[in-house]
Image 1 (tube, rainbow, N blue to C red):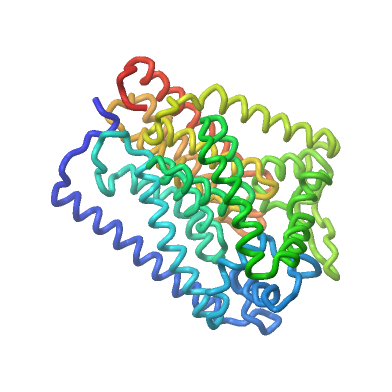
Image 2 (spheres, one colour):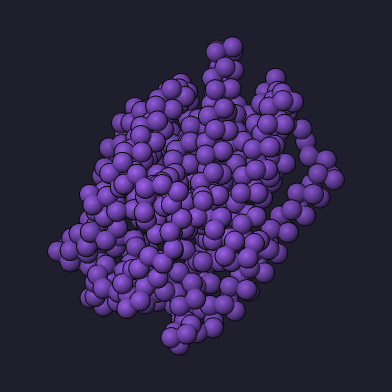
Length: 441
């Protein structure tokens, strides 16, 4: 029996799908109106800076005017190419530019969802349109997606690039996949994990295209815009600001919003602040919640041990046939990669979790598959319910209680639960393949 039982949609089912899409559209429109009202209000300093895009808008103008936004008080977190991407939006009036970026991200999220659902679909089957599994995956992914829209950050853009990479790879277009992956890496380092994945899968053309793409997006494109010498200076200063502290200097952001494994380990197991204030722009720890103090060298070893353990899991479980480029098994492998992006980033905020759309799609497809046993369905329901509670309930609490929940890593716990569930999906997919070697992966 196939992993999905596909039937022609009945009239009631079609109406339900239409109602679901209409509800999502109304939610997005309502959110855009709320965001517009927030963005139009000046901040305490009299400037329109009430979202990430509006804060960065001035920095983008500054870097195009010849300034260096990687030094000083206002430090830009992304490489120069991200400023190039956002420049057309930054050139618009503040509110118009913010709303244009908002709705561009809505379109990117829709495309990313379509590509993710195609990846999960078993090869050789007909796409069922919007199914219950798809709808549940979207609902589970809504909190980070709406959070990123509210902040008007760039995380949905990264989701879009990762999903586009996997769609191109699914179609066998490895060169295009590598070039798009390179742009994702050039804008935000964490998609670099897919370089290791493509290496494990021996996708040499994709890797070569990624290497060429990194030269394109880090050097050639911004060099053509800013000048090659100035771009090299900007890139070096971005590295000093965002990469070297964690990679070389063993510095990790331990503040409570950080839900990565490094953040939680340093926050709870070393004397590192969970709350920081900035009098005179000097970071000062004001609250600590560590339960032990093993020291930063040992904490670094703990994090490295977690990375090694994750790598071992990948080697043991990511064993889909090399010819496979889509389907539940390959999708679960890619889902494990996007969870790794969140777990091992130097800093992972709540709205960075937009990429969980892929793990949710993998698990909800398994939940609704007709050959999934009742016991597995009950277990999956419990896991997804726990993840939903861990990622949404803290936001319903008072501000102090919500912050305290983040101190102890509620989102990190959700990421680990999803890791366990995706690993179980990989084991199940391998068992199906061994039992039916002629089947689809």
